[in-house]
Amino acid sequence: MDQRAELSEFLRSRRARLQPADVGLPDLGRHRRVPGLRREELAQLAGVSVAYYTRLEQGHGSNVSGEVLDSVARALRLSDAESAHLTHLAGPKPKKKRAAAARPQRMRAELQHLMDAMDGVPSYVLGRRMDILGSNRLARALFGDFTALPAEERNMARIVFLDPNSRDLYAEWECVAAEMVSALRLFAGCFPDDPQLSALVGELSVKSDEFRVLWAAHTVRDKGHCVKRLHHPLVGALTLSYETLNLPGDQDQSLITYHAEPGSDAVETLRLLASWGADEAPHFSR
Image (tube, rainbow, N blue to C red; front, top):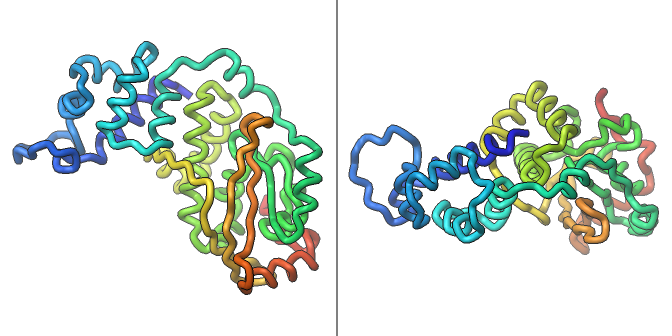
């Protein structure tokens, strides 16, 4: 990924979504040649010169201070996730980070033991690029048998966009798809030199029109918990809450768990699904 281009496109996309009235500036009613705020208006809000902001938006952010980035983030009304993304895009990447992205990830055996012991809780571990590093039996029964896929295809974003079964499984597929792209965007900001991420984005852009549109929007959200409505081909509809638990000792790995509200119909539905197991789970398309 071209880090300078990513920074430039991200800033332009965030500037385009703001109007003068949104930030307390007068709208003089003149024809605006660009959507959203002009560069000079954004520079005024951030307290920097137009020339300085222009250079930053052109991708020349290697020497920008944290204070300036904070001012720009406030002027653009960025969320915490967007502000962190801006900092990653604007700052130089340490060699240690670049080397980490190139190393294959492995899940610790203890995490597999933990997931196997989580009775009634579908769970899996995601690594960089949304790679699926491990899962328990109930997760495979619910979402499809990840282990049936070749290792290089065990990727949650790839499954969501390229496996037609996912559109039937997720009642709100568009929301899930947007979450996947946001997660990949966050990773791209941290590891712009990762060739595997570039290959994944390239493949999804070629094969999925929806992915291509979402990727071009530069939307960044850090959504670690939510409620998902599913429609499983064997047990029907169920509503589950998911939680994302980052694993500090395992770099760039997260444990994703799903659980049913106590007393809800989904509790019994999960029990029924567990009794059938992954052998009866829907198979991924190839």
